[in-house]
Image (cartoon, one colour):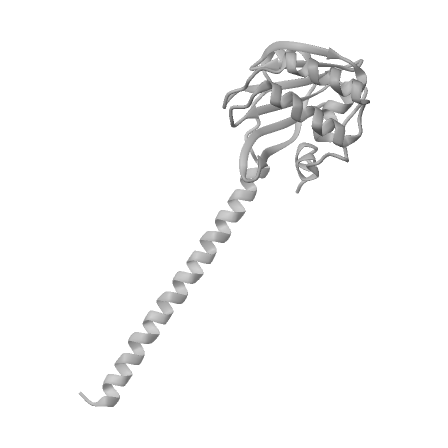
Length: 203
């Protein structure tokens, strides 16, 4: 076999490897792109669990406006959905925040974290926040992965809490109600991207 024949065959083999490599890169890019699109579509179309029957009976006009996954340093903390009978965050109508926990959390720490976020919003005095924290600590249980806490805003200014559909306590204080739900829904929230998801504003 001549040198030119060997060279020609080697060139054909090399080109075949290059073509296969290019095809592999293209398929990988398509697969990754498809996975990214699927992930984004999955976030937008998360399955919305119905409200507990006890809550649905109390507020039958509510509909899920939006929701999403709350993460902290890449860890999934909970999924939450915001239920209301129209757009926005009304002060004079019923609405609910339904939180499904993905991790075990201490109830006292949930209460303290809530107080910290309320303080960041600039809501209430130090004395009010102390009282609100004590009230939440009495109500909030330790939660385990799979538990859900539903907070319902009832006019005039009462928050009623449910654990897995069972009522666990009320806090009747209009200022507290606005401060508590403001953790997620106030424009000054520390997680504005999550607020957009709850309000159905994220495309």
